[in-house]
Length: 409
Image 1: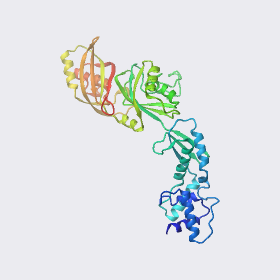
Image 2: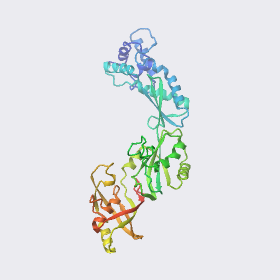
Image 3: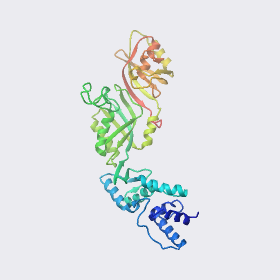
């Protein structure tokens, strides 16, 4: 069956607009709009069948939706007003009846070259919005997405996040990396948490995030770190790599250097950041999967007498050792109970501080340093305590270096 015969069959279903008629042949040619293609097919059918040409007054497929492109473009423009964006995309929730109608034609005539109604609405409304706003329609990388709810006659706006990458130093102990809800009430508020719903009063995420939310007029700011330090540990040296996700920002063109200055100013020395570049969703995936090494400086208390030879012998035994660590007791309530093998890349003594040993340890990502020292009641083997044959524990821990996701500084 040739194109004109197919068009005649489609016209026999009932009144159909030029745009919908053209859509059923949308992938067969280029350089014509579906409306132009449909009008040409209508003329061709009239000539072939020697009958009067008449334009459609209604459409049983789209119900007149494609004649309202300008109206929907105006709604989108109004909905996006007040948002800062350069690129946008259009999405459409097509009414079930319209979707079923076009599927009937596709199935009956086995059409493989039709364009869905949703695709034409997205494209044509997008072109109209671009003319109205001067912005760019970019379905692949939009700053904002306008969803047309045809049945509800409304426009829903989704604002895509902004991402930036950097490193942070944590200079205050007792500060978690991210917001923690109260373990007892899970954020609802109870006597144990003073009805705050929080396990800890603040976090690195919130300290960095507060000026970010303000400057971007955002709903939230989410910190994605390359691992995390213990709450009672400092993160010093070059800092820990992170990506911050700015959720639903109304402003997007914030100067990165100015942002860094505002974060550091408002943090008041508790946290400092060094911002490196703008990022994207892929950076979050990369930083979450990063397996770089980490270097720690720890203050260790060893019970009972020991000689320097014994200490150095234990350090040599641990250097380069493969350590089997069962999930530590201190985190067993929130981590799967399993045994992990991690390597001690390097370990050496830096000296003493008030009778305690200062050690510097470099280990693979995921190596539990406190348990490497204490043995965690035999759950970590080998351990400094186990080799020395006497109890040992970490009194203070600082993270001094975290390898970046690209393997460099």
